View 1 (tube, rainbow, N blue to C red):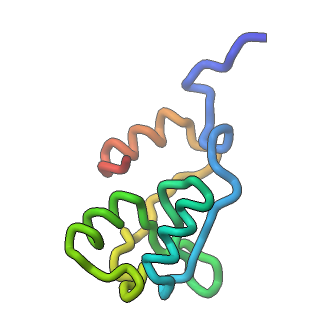
View 2: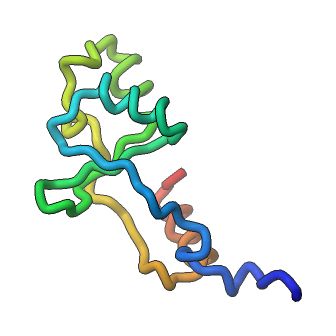
Length: 107
């Protein structure tokens, strides 16, 4: 059986299914601990209905918190999250998703 061509691979084929999410009022220190515990580089921020409203990455922690000498236990994730969340349909091709990421400067 041959491997699928890259054009045939969908987002669904490679996506993470068990997302770690937090509400917007979560403090940065708690987000950092979750990232460490789960060995992940980003966390999705969700509203009280579970809808994604933002994302915070390791880079956000460095650039927006550490580099500004902010106290991570005083800063809520809503103040540094990137919003709105950019997403694609799970049936989108991986190539199309990569093109969108490049256009939107998403790492």
